[in-house]
Image (cartoon, rainbow, N blue to C red; front, side, top):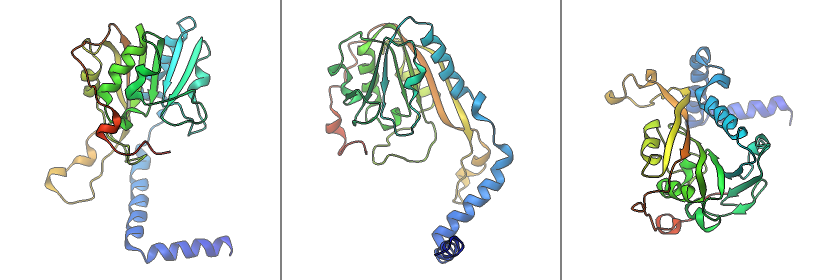
Length: 248
């Protein structure tokens, strides 16, 4: 089959499938409408805060670094950016490239002694955690006082890595997750990667939603200032609140 006939067959199949045709038309329309408004993401505050984090890490002599969700699934591991690390540990729920220790973030302190790491960070992980508030307490336990914590996740994003896609976070969410009670001080928290939410239903409550500001990313940088308040306790395992395991 020639390439031209293959393309023709695909177009014919789409034309006879109303749902596929509707998706294609929406995609073409949105590309046409949004192209003039697209921005270069290089200077986006979401990425800039990560650069601030890297600068602060590089100012520390030989830090112990822990990456949560370290399995390399994008062929773009950030491990190489931490050139001054005395120890770099990649932690993930599944074994794979970039993973040194396999385990559940909700039980992090069972894998590492208290006060082990100067730096802890995770990228696009928190939306997949069944109990992010418990993860914060566990992260605090394995961090040294004064240690740096960086988290990036999503305020708005399509569902992915199902069925383990549980949460979306705003800037305000990190004010209640990272504060003196949980043992942290916020250094910076920003939303970025702007987008538009375009409703595909006619509903008066959604009128004008497509012109309201929305973002695909939120990044937070914090410092451990104390151990978490002992009143904060969530003695529940992941298996008790969800079924299955994070997809491979």
